[in-house]
Length: 382
Image (cartoon, rainbow, N blue to C red; front, side, top):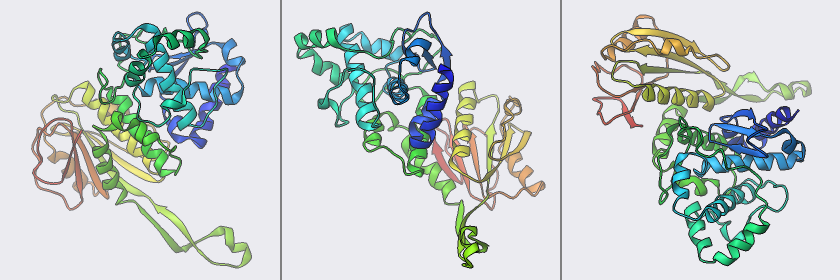
């Protein structure tokens, strides 16, 4: 029952708040009655206790889930967050994290939280980091002790940093720690998706701009490159069916399918992290378009895998892992030409170490995971 309610809340987020919806589904659901008295996250899972979830109204449940997303968003839940906490007394850091997450829930997302959790209107303007709040709290230690006695902290922080394999942590400017690439990509995608649907919460972009700062220029380039080739138009050949019963013929807006080539360099110089990043970008492209056909290639010195995917199709991950040899980009362009594959553009994910050959007659965007330059096409460094 509790799991059903959590899944329902995440589904509602996808409609009402795509940003929260996109990020909430990244956390794997895991019931944990023994170690988690309420709800918790380690930036990899969303833990819950059945009794706690049963005590929440539907609106409060959505607020608590958003609270957990806030802890991931602001880098509280991973090992970097544990390291950052060492700079402050435990109660100060705990309270600062709660203020930051609750500001996100209440002021940015417009959601409710159960009870009377730590919240201050002072931190509502989006200019505060968790460290800045902690330093501010340090100025009035007596008040902090009083606040801690009455604070109703709604979730469990004991899961933070427990998973040694988990790199789910983020930090903005002025905050220490590594930036987890997967979460950075997912946050960028969620932000872009919310913008596209016109459902970007006021103040959200400013609040997380430091987290996304290193990746946004690249995201914008990729979005513009592909969006400029998506064909949305009005057509009289496809009359608007909603008006036909009234004898009125009006044009309808339609999206012509865009055919995108996406080639992944699977040569020996590409590591597991590179291939994972390439798959993340592919998922991001798929989520950005309502109508698409992606012509997917895995290639080193030869094309080892070709697959066409559309909305709802599964990506053959095993096919994308084939290769491991030397690098030449020419085989992909030859394969497209020899098999008369019609594409609007090609995106090539690589470290840029290989033979480029001559440019084709369609636009090419090179997503480079290193510092290599390209002789032609558009280059975007990841």
